Image (cartoon, rainbow, N blue to C red):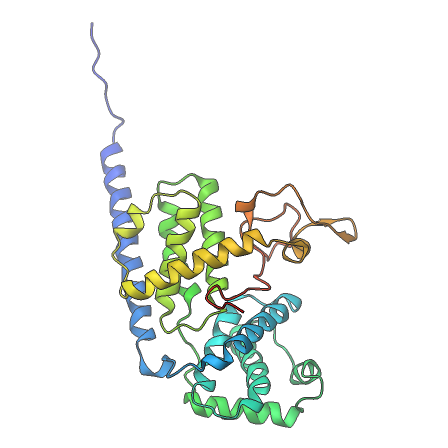
Length: 305
């Protein structure tokens, strides 16, 4: 007697429910992404101009920000907020002699508002090595607040990754690759902060494309979301992130790994890591908060000097 295959009862309804959940997740991701795009287009958060002569100085500011947040165990997303403050402020601020004070005030303000871990004004003054005092720091803080009209919650590139992360988790990708993908996208976004940008969404979108290419992940599921709004900007960022990341891999050194691999009391550097591991899960015994290495000694690929 032949038996026909029978499906478990309720399997079709469960499958329909899973499909509905995926569709809801997809719709919600698109809605949240579009909401962030609307915010980045708000004139309040736009960078009015960039001064090419200050590009190298700006890169030093970003590296200093990463050093500060890593030292004080502050979430690195605060760097994205601080550099947004800095870019918005200096684009309308002509006194280059006060850039250091403005830069230190921006990271102080960003941590004060967006981090559970605060940095005291006295600590910031000590970091300034006598360049400014507490009164000047607090005066610059008030100046920045008034300049922004107290708009202090800008959309930053990592916000777009946060929106897409649930779909990465639901995507038909190997679980290990999913983890590597999320870490690499975050690392690429952090690299992107070294360079002036007007559209955080373009940086995040390009970081996704570059990460998927480096990990040989099919991008059809991401392209199908139709989240790209500025293709020309995305192309520029794909090129820049690809070249900068490739250079980071080529120039990997102990400084990149030292905070993430430990042996007893002495920091050690793993020399067996694959080149493609940079920016992903770097060591089994890394501090729990650190999912990937902070980008350091980043060079502008379009600077011949």
